[in-house]
Structure formats: structure tokens, C-alpha cells
Image (cartoon, rainbow, N blue to C red; front, side):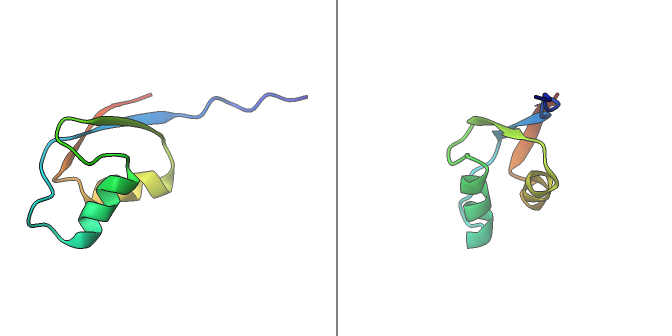
Length: 66
């Protein structure tokens, strides 16, 4: 049995409200596990997650990436 390498994670924090934003940006925040101010979510660091963060970069902040 081989062991898979530990997955890298990235923690994002919501720093702005999605009020008056495009509906897809609200949905992206929900997809990232965020929906209220100052909430943090730790996610597996994949290209899909990085793309989601990039699309709402004005609403979130990357706290740390391990």
C-alpha cells in the first residue's frame, strides 16, 4: 500500500460583502464555503479553487497557503 502525498491547502477569508455584485460572484463565494464577513475556509489547493479565488479576489484574502 502506497501513501499519497499530503494535499496542499489554502485558507481564504472573506473581507468584503457580496452586496451589489454579480450573481456568479455570490455563487463563487458560496462554492468557496464563504457567505458572511470574516469567515474563513480551508480548501485543497487545486487549479479550480485558485481560479475561483481569482474571480472574487476583490472580496477575499488568502490567509495562508501550506
